[in-house]
Image (cartoon, rainbow, N blue to C red; front, side, top):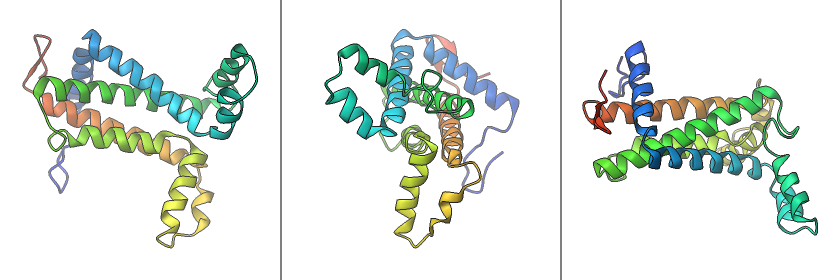
Length: 199
C-alpha cells in the first residue's frame, strides 16, 4: 500500500517477511551483528544515562566511591536491574534499543556494501536519529518536546499525556520499524552474503 507521497508502508505479511529476512541475512554477517549489538548497548546506555546526568556526573564519574560501587550505581540505572523503570517502560526501552541497533546495523551494511551516500540512505539515518530522540524516556522526551514546542506557543498541557510520556517511545518504535522496512525494501532484489533478499 502506498501513501500519498509514494512511500510504501509494511502492510502485508510479505513486507514483514522481507524485513525479517533482510535483518537475518545482514546480522548473520559477524561485522554487522557486532555493529548492531554495540549500537544497541550504546543506545540503551545513552537512554538511561541521559535521564540521570547529575547522578552519573556526581557519583559515577566525579564521586569518591570505589570503582565497584560506581559500576553498581551505573548498573542500577538500567531496566530490569534497578527500579527506575516499571516493566512496561523497561520492555519498551530495551525494544527501542534493540531496534536502534538493528537499524544501525542495516544502515552500516547498506552504506558500506552498496556505496550509498547520505542523500540516498536518508531514511535509515532519519530513523536512527528520530528513534534515538524519541526513545530516551517518558519524562525526558516530554520535557524536551515541551521545551521545543513552547517556542511555538504550545502550552504545558503536553505534560498531561495519557501514557505519561511513553508516547515518545512508541513513536520511536514506529519510526525505527519504518526505517528498517525502507532499508529492507531498498535492498530488495539484491543479495546478502550470497543469498537473495527478495522473498
